[in-house]
Amino acid sequence: MGKGPRQRPQNLAKKLLGIRHALGLSQIQLVKAMGINGSTVYKRISEYESGRREPSLLVLLAYARVAGIHLEEIVDDNLELSDKLPGNVQYRT
Image (cartoon, rainbow, N blue to C red; front, side, top):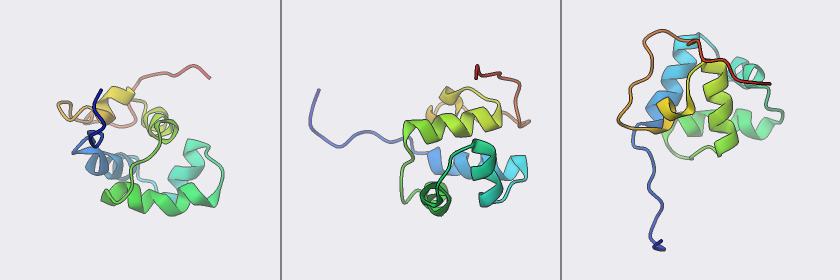
């Protein structure tokens, strides 16, 4: 494995914004629905959605759970988000 920059999904920010809009949630509502505590995440939602910052895997998983989709749909640039959100993927709790 090389020491070059890590590859980032090119469509990640657009997908994260699309998830929130499709669910009809404000940034505050999204954070509450994701069950992630702390103002740090709330302040970063805008940065995630604009591509200025990349969320952690746990935050991406929380997006997937709230949206009811597989995490792969979010991070794979070759996949489009489902037309209807929330989807029907059920995660174990």
